[in-house]
Image (tube, rainbow over the protein chains, first blue to last red):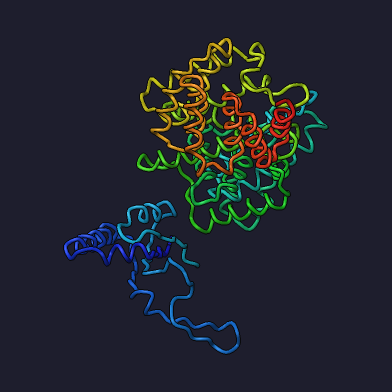
Length: 113
Length: 398
């Protein structure tokens, strides 16, 4: 089955990352690269997004498109990237998410069709 | 064919429904379809058996109904239909099938209410109506929970398997907490009267015993089974003839089932020998200390305090701290216990037993005014009729 793992950042996580010194940050990135390497046979696609302050949201529900600055939900948690994976079942996707070494929230959604 | 009592009907359906579900899922490879067939067969049994009597081979009867219904429903699915047509009963039951069933129903990706409802329906053979009655919610609510859970199992790809060793600990803990919740709900329902509906404690014990048979080397499973049996062994002494709560010091201990207590205590010893202590084993050991005491005055409070400290080490929680404080009242005295209880105010201010416990300690310390105020807080915080009447009595007498 195909799933998308959505990586969700929190304000706290972003602040912690900013507070790291260079070697610390490099180690954090290395752990993420290692995770990708460990699961490369299952990952079919992945994307990392720029921070939420670069987001623009368009709302189409009121007739006239409404364009606003910022992410679609005002909140402390924002999607920062995703991977698409091909695995046997939810437990395999959960096993990948469980060892994800970076941002503190991962949402798993099956891909339709 | 024999005269059917309600309890017998429940028991026979439960003994066979889960096994039939396990065999059918295995055979047709579709959890939700198999579950529907079993539910149909159970509904049919509950209609026919009270009138016609329980058949000599209830498993074969249920299987025949489920199979007939399946062949009808699966008309357009040649592969599954073929498998079902070839199915021979009785199939050789694979104990693993029933475990897979339980682990799927209690998958952590399902909400707790759905885990509970699915487990009761699939593993214990309850109907949606019976579950609704037991939890005092509308039948449509339970129906929606089941439908949504089954859709999620199918669409989100929740697998039908026993978890591997690396995740077994967490997943088993999830299963045990579903059983424990069921038991707690049954032990003292938080609303309405105690006599209504099905005895969920019986289903909880059935589930724990089934798990114990399937996983005899998991000490926490054994611990939970012992815990449930120790509570049930003393259940008849917990209420007076009017349904009022009889507190432990006042219970008539001759009403306790001594044989059941001895057996459950042996289970605890058996689990403890595996040297992997856990919260259920420790809770069972604490209850065993109470059950072993011939009189309230004989209770081994020092041992109980040691067990609470071990429990707090493994599973710290404010409610367990409250229980420890109650035990400490008999070791270090009410003043020391009250200090421990008062330290929990922030965490437990909304919990009625926190205030009820404070009231008892305050009364011991000759502060009747403060005690009354605490009892009034407790009364305002519980809807349970038996607990309310106990608190009211206390307010009237003191």
